[in-house]
Amino acid sequence: MSKYRLVLVTAPNLAEAERMAQKVVEKSLAACVNIVPKIRSIYQWEGKVEQSRETLMLIKTTKSKLEKLQKRIKKMHSYEVPEILVFKIDDGDESYLQWIDSVVKR
Image 1 (cartoon, helix red, strand yellow):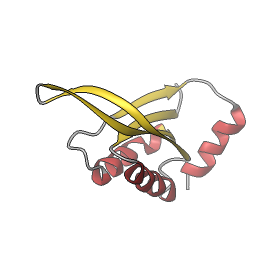
Image 2: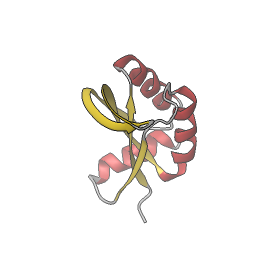
Image 3: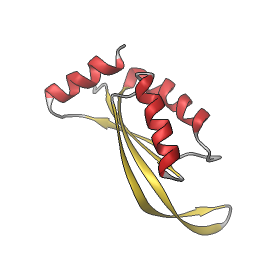
Image 4: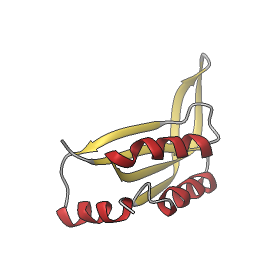
């Protein structure tokens, strides 16, 4: 079973995404966060179809840090229900995966 995870999180703006990314990397909860600004999200919220611009974070971490990472994101996030989706990384460049290990095990 893979120990690596890719976590997708949306934020309402670039500043909030950068603040969260900085903190989770500083705390060694993630090895890397890619930030993709200006995505368009269409979703249902409280019975209405909504549209908004958001910023997407792609967070690379390990299974062992996942619970702490999710708690930290929920603590910092401005959304009532933040999007936190977790995907197993079953394969990848071995050197890159070892680098993830070296960063998040601190």
